Length: 310
Ligand code: BDR
Ligand code: CA
Image (tube, rainbow, N blue to C red):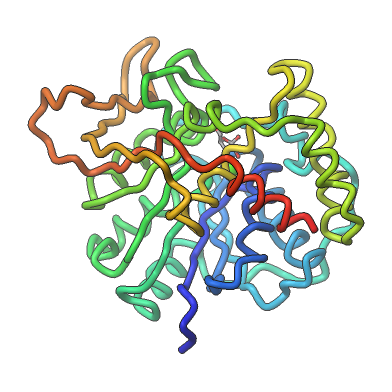
């Protein structure tokens, strides 16, 4: 056993997932024990292929990759291919990775790794919560073995990005998000609105991408389509959601303001499905389970990204 914190990442790569993964690959204080792959940004075939390729490009063939559920638990949901490219990695036509995905299902890998690293595991979820919900249904004792659980998802005042009220990861599989939120005693949340408050200036991102490293060049290629879409739709700043969640996970000391509140997932409603309903005034009497990231040290966040691309 090393002194490093064991880190398990559930992810649906995805351009901003890829940036978050590069940040984790680069971190000296954490040891990645696995990537469990969700469907979300695009279909599972692509998100698995993208995870394997990113590991190959970054020289991290040692990290096992496990495929999870091919869709939401209950209701079909739209993907985000219009943001990330139809293959999730900007449709650049890369050569497939040589390595194959592991045989074990992601939900089973989450449970096994939670036993192997019981009490120390840092679990980070960067996509829809389907795999983690399934793992919880198989074994409801999972939260007892997880030391920290960081989630990218939600929009804490219901200013969503996929519907007016809902954020993509939660909207894609609200039932899974509900199961996960009910099961864990404590969840650290980096929501879409925190992401909006921590935009990355496109010119600065372009400079970081000039680093010349092999993985930096690959990242420049696969992120180009998304960055152009973002400039067109959202202006000067790029909102790399999963990168902020990963900064919060890897370096929680960079968090400048965190607020604890009860949170519920809206499962129905014409306008509200997938919304994260935060009990700001503590009307419900439910426990303050969710630690909501409000402000993170911007210089530190950008430093982690720059280092990851170098
Ligand atoms: C989240 O949705 C996905 O498109 C991103 O990868 C991120 O996890 C942002 O709402
Ligand atoms: Ca994601």
